[in-house]
Length: 197
Image (tube, rainbow, N blue to C red; front, side, top):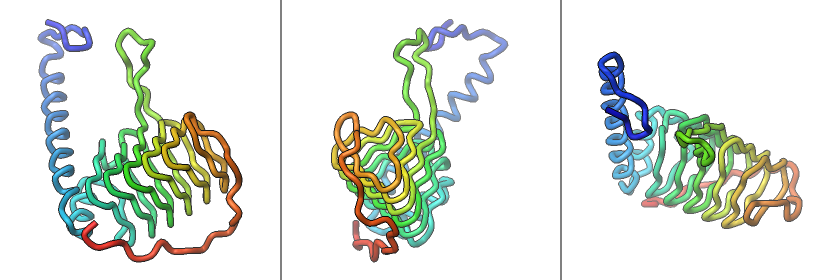
């Protein structure tokens, strides 16, 4: 008997593989519960469930409605940060979002990708780090092994495939430097989040 990736299943490995499969199904079910929770119009209830899942989400930061996750226990969000509606956050490798950072709606952050040249379609995990005072525009995509420096800005719809230095503005597919951000010592707070969002 073969698994879906072609590895042999035999008497010596069937029990560990069965346990692993059941744990995977359990995680997938919990991610489905979190998807449903993501539509409850209460920041406190959502934060309770996200923190219960192992996410590091302080009380003064928020995730708006409709967010989706892979492995929320790998996600750490700093203080006074806002994650927009319908964002996707991948915690299969470390995902760190700094203080006073803002992700607009429908931003997708992945820290796993497949090796398309491998016969077994292997996974390749890599951390994503987003610094303090960063703004990521709507529908941007950030791929594995990327660090976005403090104060950087990612334009709407950008696909970020490499590190973005501090206080630079990047955009495009793939993202490239457009300009520099004029402020170099930001000290603002993002303010009160919208209720029922």
